[in-house]
Every structure is written in structure tokens, then in C-alpha cells.
Length: 466
Image 1: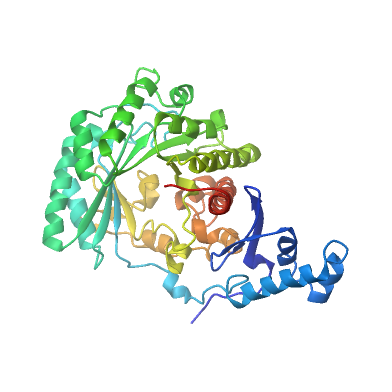
Image 2: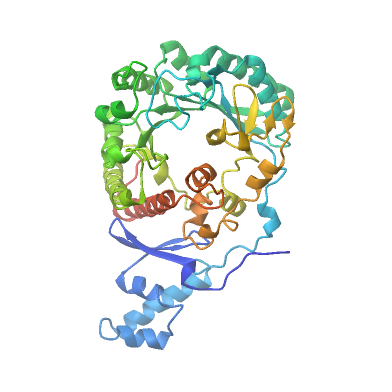
């Protein structure tokens, strides 16, 4: 079999500083170590220099016994497989997730919207096509398609998306009811979610979502002036005053059920940590702030020139995050939620989201696409819920994507955290599914460093009451 494996070298670890700690990540095992100054220097040289050479280099700075003790500690961690560990030996054929069960679906129940967000990748909600609402008939065929292609997978995920899905709320309710019927008939379990801009939220809808939606994603960009610059109503007015109170009420109604307040930051609010802090002040606990992905010609687009400020802003946000947690205040930020103890299996870490194979999106007309960010693009239309996948070459392209078919990922230290990044971002930035979006890669690496630094800070220097 064709296998993956590398010899011990410096690229098997990532050494960095965050939250005042000197940290070393063992890339293959995911083990994280907090070292003192001496051990931090030594671990970055042990693959290139002998013990005698290192003793000689540091003899004027440290006592010989201290150097030997640090080297012994490093050797012990290596023997335990927690430093410079070998990557798992994997048959490359196992990374091709072709003919795998479909477990998740994004249902575009509307291609229309009651907001006009400037950065909308869906081009005002209609995906550059005619405005449309999904019929209950098409939606039911989509859910049946998911069940029929889920094989022995019992837990299935469906996200009601748009446009603005609440503009077709009666169909959403009908599809949920149909899904509950399918659960009983086929021994499946549907986890429904919905993504909404909040304009149409009512007490009745809040109560329904509390009962039927496992998660809701609520779109708000943060501070009023930031939100209203980009997220405007049909008459060109700001949307903050309309939606923010509804979100607060909706979140309160959900109790302990999952939700996310999700924002988008652009070149106009590179100080986005202040927007996340604003979420905190509004009482929102579960948050996400995503970088805009757009044509560089737009004045709000993020470019490589913005990276220094963006990366510094993640550090600022991490500082606030630690401060809140140490004060016992519950708070989470999606990109700082890194599970170092368990996380997905090694295969999942290598192949990523499963777009086009384990995950599909469905347009209002019933057309199938690899994910919601490819909807409306003819080159990525795989088939229909009526006729199934008629262009198998499209999902095949996606099934062959993993961290070893993307050259930029092979030696990236963060590859097991992002699993190669977003295929849609790669394609829309570079017209190449195998070439990751560089700006996104730099941000992901920084977010992972911050996430690890936060865990170290809370474990060693404070409390975490959540």
C-alpha cells in the first residue's frame, strides 16, 4: 500500500509564544508542552545538534546540570511519543472518501432575502439567478435523498439556509415534520439548524426553533455602526435596531440550547475584537466572527496587506477571552474552540469537511452542489434530488482533496486543525481547489496559536468556570 510517514526533523514540531508562555506543539500527536526558556531553546535544536554541542553552546548561560536535566526531559517526551512523534501510517486510499455516506445537507429554502448586505456571497440572496422559494415537494425529495444516501449513518444534519430561510418558514416547518416521519421509518436522527438574519423573528418562531432546531446561527456584525455599514435593509437603512433586540430575546428563549451569534469582519473593521467584545456586553455567550471572502476589487476586501493588523487583533481578542474566563464569565469564540484531548479521528483530520461527498447543498429547484458556496455555479452542479448525482466526476474531484493532495498543506504545522481549509475559498481565490487561500491560512494558524495559548493560560494561570 502507498503510505504516509516522515523521519524525525524540526518540522514535526511547532514552537511559538502566546499568552506569555513558551509552547511547543507536537504536530502528529497533538501534544502541547509548556517549556521554560532553556528547554524551549533546546527543543528547537535537538534534531540538528548533538548533546555535547548543546552543552557547549549554553555552558555560559546555564549550569551543566540544568542543561542535562532539560535534555533528559526532552528525550523522555520523545520516548513517550509526545515530541517528534511519527505521523500515522495511513493507506492513501483511505483518504479518498468516495462513495462515503452523505451525512449533512444544506437546504436553500429561499433564494431571496430581506436584507442587502454589501459583502453577500449569495449576491443579495438569489445567487445571481432568479428569486425562488423551495417547494415542500422539492424539500421532501431532498430529505429522502439524504436518507437514501446516508447508508448506515444514523445521525444526519440539515441546515435551513438562504437567502433568508424565514421567508419560507411554513415550508421549513413542513420539512421538519417530514424529517420526523423519516426518523421513525428509517431509524435516523435529524439534527436541524437554521441560519437567519433575524428580521422576521417572532415569539412564535422563537418557540418553534427552541423545540425543533438543535442550533441556530444569528447574523450580526457587532457594533451598530459596523453592522449598519454592511448589513442594510431593502430601503438602505441600517438593520441593527431591527434585529439586535430580536436576537437577545431569541437567545434568552433558547435557554441552554445551542446558538451562535455570527459576524463578518471586513477591511472596514479590522478592530473586530471590539465587535466580539460588544457581543459579550450584549449578553451573547456563543460567538463567531468570520473574515469576509470577496473579490479584491471591493474596498471592504481583506488582503495580505491587512494580515499584520488582523493577526494582532486575534491576540487582543485572546487576551480579552482569558480575562473573561478568569473572571468566571462564560464565553466562547468558535475559532478558539480547539479540542487538544480528543477531536476528530486522524482520517477526518486529513480529509476535512467532506464537501461533495459527505456534505451536499440543494438549491430551491432541487439541484445538487458540493456545498452552499458553490450553489448557482454550473460547473459544480452534480445532479438533482430527482435524478441523483449525474456528474460523478464532480464529487470525485472533491473526494480526492486532502492535506496530501494540497502541496501547501503537506508541511504546514496547522494541517490537522484545518484539514486543508475551505475548498470554496481556495477555488474562489485561486480557481484551484488544491491551492488554499493564503490569507485564510495565515489567520487559521494564528487562531490555533491563540487557542492553545488560551488553554495554557487557563490551566496554569487562572480558572475556567465554563
